[in-house]
Image 1 (cartoon, rainbow, N blue to C red):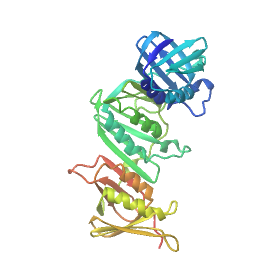
Image 2: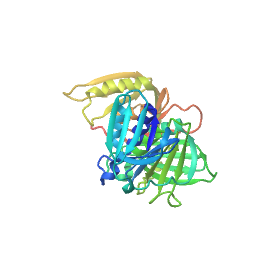
Image 3: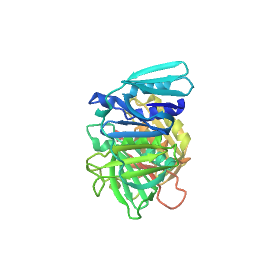
Image 4: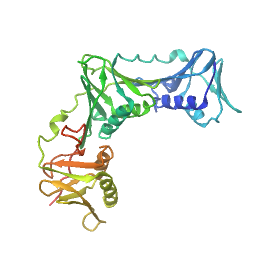
Length: 376
């Protein structure tokens, strides 16, 4: 194997592929990154039996070949290379990189022991990469972090014709986002439960291309031993789907509301951050909505306290309601609207955060939060 490649192109491709490397590989060979060179391109790949990553970049190839080297070490080296073209050659069981006056020699691993990457399932449809990344970010924040309940660590993807619905919950909040896409067939339908961290990292990393192709495999319902794949900007990645029945989340949204309040989003965020400085861990911030204003309070008794008032538009009766401040901040940072609308029923039942509607249609993004019950 012998080729020359642009330093930045190599560093970017290696860094992206290295994201998939397992922190504690079950077998040593999975710590490796596979390099396959032809006369025109270099393909880098990584696989941990759950997630795979593959990217191709243009090179000036003189000699084709394949090698397997430590992915983490290669990533560390590429990040530190000087700004010069990189010459990569193999010599027996070694791979050599030369960049300007810097030279590195890496030991190879047996490439024949490396598992074959899974093939991408059939393409189910296409969506704009920026919209996909934004939608996934809006929903992934509500996914659980507790690996003992794998189902809650995932994002549910529902495909119904030209509409895709994403949903995730950690039992204390629920985020749902709908967006349009171009399916391969008008009656395309399917369901998948994808690890939220994998989906979020993937969506964010595929914005270099204009579109993302989504591939869905497995059974007729896309679950079980199925797999999902994403492709865009010369990058491909696959992920195993999670097992388990997702909560029937649509029934969690109130059928009707007693009222709603609207607050300028950026002012709401800033005030919440200030007031929450005195909130002990897991203690709520109280919101008192009345005609024309909302008063934010945190801290109780002999502890430090904070109070701040903001202008607000209230439709309905006055209400005092309390939330985990970080959950509210997470929602406000993703509603994508200058005005935040908080719709509620009672102080003890879930409230729903959205942007201010621009038309009569239902909002494409809804963020449900469970309030904290106030004593007394």
